Amino acid sequence: MTGAETLGAGVHETPLRDRHEALGAKLIEFGGWRMPLQYRGILDEHRAVRERAGLFDLSHMGELFVEGSDAGRALAHALVTNPPALKLGRAQYSMLCAEDGGILDDLIVYRLAEERFLVVANAANANVVSDALVERLSGFKAVLDDRSLAMALCAVQGPRSVEIVGRLTDVDLSSLRYYAIAEGTVAGIRALVARTGYTGEDGFEIFVDNGRAGDLWETLLRVGEDAGIAPIGLGARDTLRLEAGMPLYGNELDRSTNPYEAGQGRIVKLDKPDDFVGRTALEQVERDGPKRRLVGLVMQGRGIARHGYPIHAGGQPIGTVTSGTHSPTLGEAIAMGYVAPAHAEPGTILDVEIREQRVPAEVVPLPFYRRPG
Amino acid sequence: MVPTELRYTKDHEWVRVEGDEATVGITEYAAGQLGDIVFVELPEAGRKLDQFATFGVVESVKAVSDLFAPVSGEVVAGNEALAGSPELVNSDPYGDGWMIRIKVADATELDGLLDAGAYDQLTAEG
Image (cartoon, rainbow over all chains, first blue to last red; front, side, top):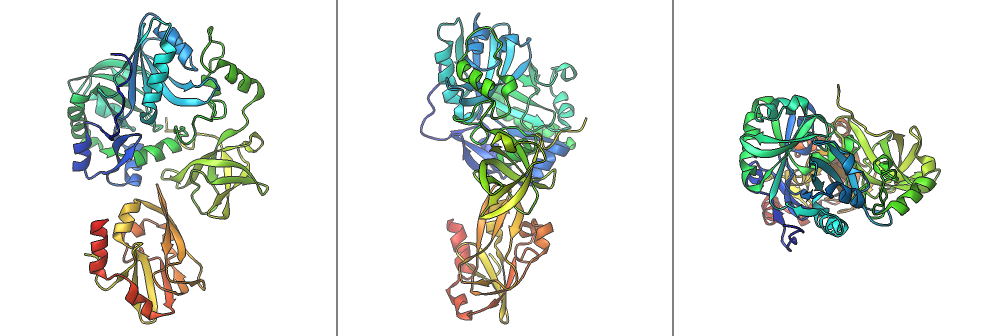
């Protein structure tokens, strides 16, 4: 079936809603879905992922399959990356941009077969991406099969992920590289197993049909128990990705931001042969250089920088914070924000306005955290 | 049931009166709503507060919340332990997680605050 089912006025539930409640989760609405914010607490959950393993319900994400003899070329036209260059079973981080180069969503594209790709979109943008792909695929021998509402996604992330998932899958994890995907079974359930994630740790994103999500979730929790697996909510998902220097659509990325500003210019493949949506505008940015740049900040005084707080240099406002939190791993307050390029050098000391006080912050290269080994 | 010897504000602060001084903190309910607390900003000793004025800020991983003085008075001390261990507010909100001690300016202001029963009702409805 092509095209997306229209999301209704109500909030979507994932197939794991009852299990989250049974585990004592605090539920919130996110991107049109009811999702767990936390179970035991954000700091606990954050540490569980860094030290052992965490289990995430990511069923709110969009799963869009693109198939046909032109599937690769069609996606090369629709996105800034060059999916036809992907080998079978490999994946890439990508973006869907508008004609003016503004980002509509950031995505992962997986090549499942010569003529079959999986595009995973953010929950809040799944409809926008689906509509854009339908439009951009026209004229190509390629069709879109939006299975977002039929598929569930569970992620296992952390140093003990390989051990836990390895007990349950026929996929050879030792030959599944980072940013690769394989079809197989997990806990006896047909699944796509991807070695991708949003935490900065090793781990897997496991795609199954909705109806099997409950079995998958319960089995992973049970089998992973002695390895210390814990359920993880969106709160810790955010602190983990921020430490890993990964952008969040809605904070670092939005309709008025282009990939170069966000430090993602390398994914814009200007040398791919054909035209793509946004090419002219993005070529211009590449020539002129971006007007602002995303930087990492470590607070040097007491205070947590948060989304929207102004950034100053020499008494003048020169940027804005896009995300910030207390970093559980580093034990200090970290943030990301956009600043004028002149102030983007690591080592630069800037001031963040926190409730009418100016608190110094040092520009640092991203990521803040890299997993050991 | 929250501690019966304390008084409460609608914004989830508690106050414990000891002679002409009072100790102030936030309730277990408030700490639970905020989640893991990572930063508490408190006033200096000597600062004068009006009843229900903001005296500081409590931050969790996800949110920032103002702190409101339950009674008027002069700040005697802030809990310095919270600088290094803000999680005390979560683990012991009525004890080691206390926030400020103030010299009470007008004890009659306490009459306008909620007692334990009224506060429990507030949070049951909330």
